[in-house]
Image 1 (cartoon, one colour):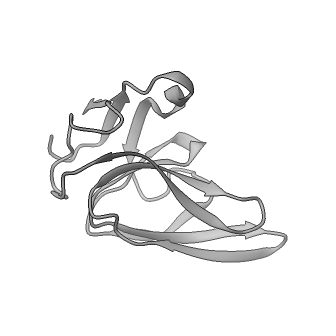
Image 2 (image 1 turned 90 degrees about the horizontal axis):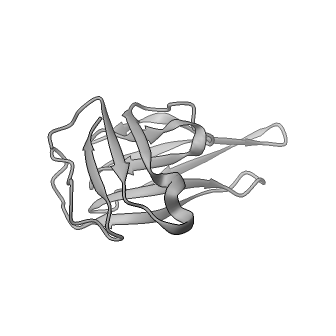
Length: 125
């Protein structure tokens, strides 16, 4: 599907059902760690405060993670394909990107609805 204001992810099973739901196009969406650098080369879709993100193949995102009165910058380079990931805060200022699902598509302008691993579906919300 072409980019849209929001998408619905469905099909995660077992303990991963928290990744199901509506992801909204935006730059921060209140996630923590905060995305402060606008994404380049594509749109980012965010699921609420859970820090789950749907990322296009060539997007770069960055921001800051606050800990103990200091700000620690982070940046994630393009993954080369579509991913659903979780931005993980270790509680001490470090931020990592945990990839949960992937799709081999490298087309930034088209959100793949099927072909995900693990098997999920994405539809316009």
